[in-house]
Image (cartoon, rainbow, N blue to C red):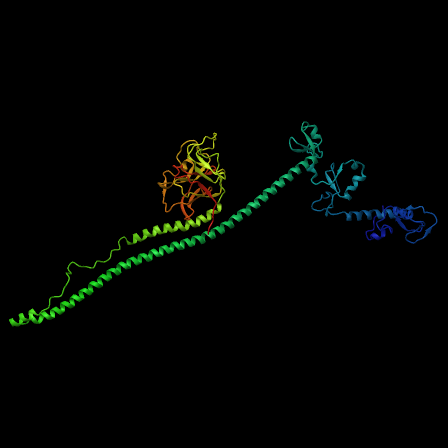
Length: 541
């Protein structure tokens, strides 16, 4: 067989009609060559039979003969061009396992040979009788992993029982009683599950991104809070420094005034002594000449003319005592301590109150918890003792021994702030209680029993503890606020009108939901009939 002349170009083997390499070339009587298909189609569309190259007209349609030599020369040239035109394998495609050097893209995979072929290397499977029986499929990578190791068949089924891929022969053996489905079907099921998982993961990612933003926002808010705290704290500390400086100045003034008083006394006494010295000197001047007189008559005559002696003080017991400073500093410091406490309570209380008011919560009293003697307003914002114990249906939530009532909603995290009007009341109790408190028996109201409350009566103001903590009462209370930081374990009370801090219970351990708790106190023959009122917060600068 002739071989292709590698020095010839594609033009030497091109049909002048299709401009491609000859396929089954034939020759016309005028000696020109064309693809059989091309010249046949060309003449089918013409009225006259002529040569497309030289335009020679034939009376009858020529009988075309195959140009054997040209066909043998064009065939290897066409195959060479086809091989060059085959695409190289891309990263996501299956490569030909036979190609050496540059690997071409596989067009088929053989399940008998366990090999993937490009178009050129696949040709024997189309020509050889033995290879034609091989099973060809779309290109697959890692063919050995796709075959059953036991039966050497493709894994095209999925066993639901053992969750593994199997071949057809496996379903007739070890997996005979197991439910199996086509691999594609299970693939679609798993892909749907993956889609759901991906959506869930995406949701989790989004939630965590939001959490990051939340944390960042918290940090920024904390920075702002810190700046405000530093500014407020600086003002308060400066005010306290002024108090200390005033105390120092007052102390210095007290010491200096004592010194000046001693100096003034000394100056007066010295002046008086100097005057007496002058008077006595004059007296001596008068007496001295008389003491030298020897004439008795003249002596008595002159002696009678002497003036009375000057008045003088008895200086033997008189002394100037240095001032005593004992206790001066202590009294100044005691006064400073009292002043600082008042100022700190005033300044810090006002700053704290302004800060905690932002945690105001809406409070509505729960009638199901109210003691039968209590009367609640329709809006659930006021309560007072009606003086008569009503007969009410049994309710496990209701207080039966203590005239208490709870807020409808509990809380188990975060912070809450509530203000109560206590004006014109002679007794009351405010605070929070845990959910599990005993509501049927008389119990001691202490943190140990689940109560953190402030109690007011004619005997004064106390925080109910074990023992009770008596608190100073500077003026009649009008409004009292309760602030709770559940996470930090703090319960604080404030005098809203005076804008001062009353008391804080810190280090509390909360392990269950808390409820704001109120006790308006007994009516006491109308002396304590004023209601205990939940007031809206009126924030002021």
